[in-house]
Image (tube, rainbow, N blue to C red; front, side):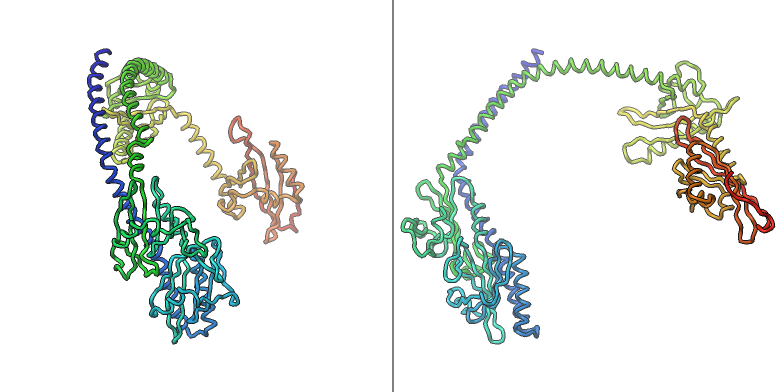
Length: 622
């Protein structure tokens, strides 16, 4: 034990030392790369922000094209009146608003800036604004600009706060309005979608919400759309600006100058890394190039700016509490590994002791198993693949009438008397081999057969054969049982069954609930019914036909339940005026010995006489 422990420590200590030196070197190299990683991380996340922006606004443009084409078709091609077209378009606008929860309003305006259709969406509930509440938006700059663009074009308003009736709506609703100019029969119409921009701003906040950084969004004038805090955004729209709050271009003039000269970049000022990316419209870049949005915005390009404190970020990554904990945990792990080696050695000795105890337990279990096999009433024989006996318990010796001595190594076919018996046994084993070869799953096949042993008194044995594959060999297990008494009993039951089938008396058997379980052919012939029509039905109907009243029916049923025999003669007048007499004998018998499961048997005999007028008779139970 000491030699094993010494060798283990000789290998472990150099390995731990090498691991510690390598870990320190990797840690130092990692610290040098942290700054570069921060730069790359910021650039990668800005690219992700562009994809997020495109995903937000591309479906809006598709919806706007759809509503424009729908409106054009309705006004030009449908042949409906103007009012009918408005009704149809109102339903179309409302269906779209129901499926797009990010629209605050879906509108149709005429060439005078007057709302013709307006669908409001509040907390997921859409409503059609009545005609009396439709507003004149001709004074709004975005309406004037949208009416001046060529038909078929799309205008996007500045990203600002929504206004209703000349006032900023409270609470604030950041809004972008998308309009499509539509020319129909010489008149201009605007199809408009008011997009709730808070969804987009929240997405940017979550996308860039990592530690030691701030994330901003400004328009083309350098005004806050998403600022350091809530009070900084939208200052350019408020009627009374707070002098203490200034816009981005005033707070960071040098950075704003860099942004105006470059589409993207990184700028270090003091301890801060500023990463900016400008999102242009299609006028500056084609849609398949980077940093291009799929629409022309009035206040584009927007600029996303992230600010990261480099010193804090590097310290956090290099000397963060998490890393210190990990380093301490690593040291503890190394020490624990060393201690574990000692503990492992002790456990190995314990395992050896446990293995010895387990071996003794296995031997005891084998002895118990051998005792069970020796005392089992069924014969058990194990054979190799050549049918040579490996083991045979005393019960097998007795059933097969073999000498009570060790037969290990001898062929079973030579031990069994009778050529026919040996042939049946050989066929059983061959069938087992064929099933084993043809069976793809791992379960062992089972073959069962009954073999007759010749002698002064015929004997029957039941053999169940299974083939099992072990790691080094295959074995066959034969479970042998003497079933002579069962076979004789089965022959008697078959004889009784034939007697019932061939009897001239009509016989019906029911269970204790009165459910018909069997009728013989004579019953079918005499009653004109087939067994499949009556088996499984209630026998009360048959008794009711033979009894004059329900009182007599209940009385007979009670007598049968008490185990009494009921005998009676029933007379029936046939269609040919003959009288048919039925002698009915009902009695009970027990199906299984020792169990209270009575079955009821009804036996009928039919006698035919002359007409009723020639042979008067009384019918009834007696």
